[in-house]
Length: 135
Length: 292
Image (tube, each protein chain N blue to C red):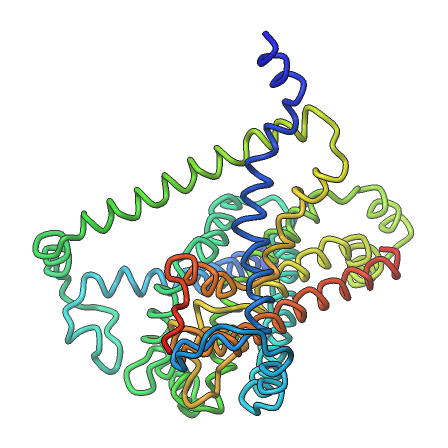
């Protein structure tokens, strides 16, 4: 089936439009990272500017950025390891043996997520610090 | 080896135990405990000993105008988000449902908003929505529209937040629908074409009805998340200006960790839980009754 060239062009314009909308916050972040403070808040917005690496120098040089990066990595990796540790045996068990009721309840991980994350604030808070009546 | 035999025989229980324990301790317990707290007077600033007060906190919260407003706002926010996201997500999926050069790249672009850090997204959009130096007003000026105050004014704060949510979560609906479209059988299309059906007819009579279960699943998943949206709103407006963008989840957070009125915050969270459960059960019931 041969496509009409005009239609084809329109399709790609549409794709470009979708991509631009999806990408613009990231482009904005990327552009701002090469701008000086003055350029970032200039009006009208600057699309052509003198690129600077000062922000990168500051973040990687003066601030302890790599430490934060390491912290995130530790959290991420241990969360995955923990999830696998709890999840894999259960997955194996569900696949290997038939456990009708249990597998239904475990396969619906969305049910507990009806409760917002804030729900666990108070329980976790009180687990760390018991309410002390002061009379 | 009695011990080995015991483990061997009860392998399925032993393997599932950690996961069940995890669900109970980390997911079920907080819900039950919040329910318990909602019947107490646990207020961190009062210094009163913890005791049961029955439905006192419920009566207090349900007569609080700020809470009732927040419920309305939560529903409004969710409804706007779901309507726009389903429409645009479906449209994007229909456009992309063909073979073309660079399809993989577009799919990658669709994934980017989903993996972006909500707080970073909030900061970028705050810059973008800035009334004096923001790109959004600059773009409005380009096409000759009057400037907007975006998140800085009570009237436009919630719709602006909806825009951000739509930006971040439309791709999820699009990807789910795309996967659904790819799994549809091709025979109905062939026979429709033989019978001379037009493109709109094929879309309305074949594609949409066959895709309905997929769309409903996407809507359910999105509604649950949209009802309890927290990070974007918290990062961008913190519920402000005034109470203009305060949804139930934000309000509950403020009550528990800003005002330390844990008992009232628990009542709000229990309400939010019930609302979320009821709406998704409602949607699922709808799906069951329409036999799609």
